[in-house]
Length: 337
Ligand code: NDP
Image 1 (cartoon, rainbow, N blue to C red):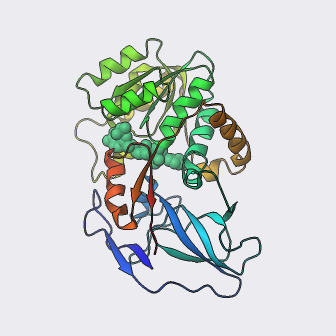
Image 2: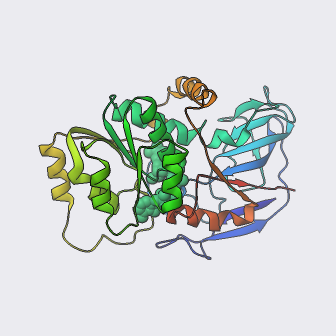
């Protein structure tokens, strides 16, 4: 049983000393338990926060413990009612080949799901995040302008496509020309601006001639600074994530901009609302799943995955996620033997 454990809490970006691959015997399921083999491991930005020793909305990962993570697994043996050998399940095995479970928090996906790994992306946590954050907090109206960064990732791509379904102008921000072309040509964004362009602010302003009504905040930092002056009165800001800050070790240089930011929110009467998907929207999954299934069938929502082969490559792939090296929803095909 291979496990990737937290060896050391990182300062800044995780490095070669942060995670360690360990091998031990395959666990054995006892009475009332089942043995799960991890097929797909989801890599998500929140995992960076779990490496820190600070109390957040969830407990940190202990030193020496396997990294946490959402997984799609198969049942190897089962003494749990409702789960049989061969079933596919959505579980929380973490970064390891095998896990033992009593069934708590595990969802049975049946024996033959069409796209098992999608339960970690478009049909799972990131999809629900986009759906609830945009529709419940962003409350976009037809004709309004919706802006999101990380526009080709599972959250941002879904935000932009739902914005189009709702009749909005969707403007994405992404890292590099290839991602921007994908956002416009495949996902249907009206425009997508490269956050690394030297005239990024000017391009963003030109892409939002009527200002910004909904800014779906995924990244913070320089992108937020460019968005602020474009926000319209009564704009809504679903505060979803701040990925540009997750590896930060100090405050940015220069004057403290928090006063100007809060001042802009105040005078423009802007609503900013943070949310944590499962806490904030515990009952939305069934409605989301139905609507998303229909949209995918109708071709209104497209989904891109980046599949990494082999659990041993998860640490490097995870670092890439925080730097924008991923292109689409990052999933590891674990390859347990
Ligand atoms: P992505 O797959 O989109 O990966 C993160 C992306 O962030 C990178 O690919 C990169 O895209 C972008 N990025 C990285 N560094 C920077 C930077 N310095 N400035 C601007 N952009 C940067 O991730 P997800 O779709 O899974 O998650 C998106 C956001 O949603 C994250 O902040 C995450 O924490 C948050 N989230 C929050 C949830 C909640 O309940 N509140 C639930 C799920 C996700 P690019 O190169 O294209 O810029």
